[in-house]
Length: 171
Image (cartoon, rainbow, N blue to C red; front, side):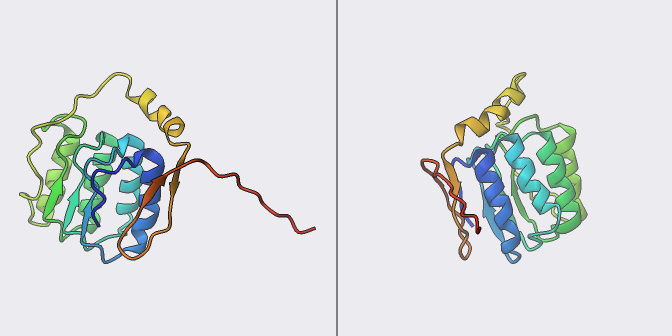
């Protein structure tokens, strides 16, 4: 599934995460440049760590502002459920190549004999002091975001005006 270059942020990431268990035979997932951000990344990794997509051969997560929390969960997911993962792209996320979370990912890939699966981490994003403030702004930025249904192997996140929800009560 190729969702590259969509602005998912936290709400869209939750929608993607919710759809992953519907694709147990998914082999490729491209979420590069989707602005998942730390909380969105954690949402997706928390689903992967449960083994929702054990047949993944390619996982592309470049330039999503993922931090050590998401990367550590990803390392656990790889260790437990990803024997077929031969292509992992994490370049352009937060931290440095030598950070312990990226070392955990390398060790997890090595367990399955895929130590060369991880791309080169040469364009990493520096960790900023106000990262938590940016995460809190996600909800405000996404008021108009709405996740649509998932059909086949495609997920779509649309941005629009929030709709008023009216609930009927039987009386």
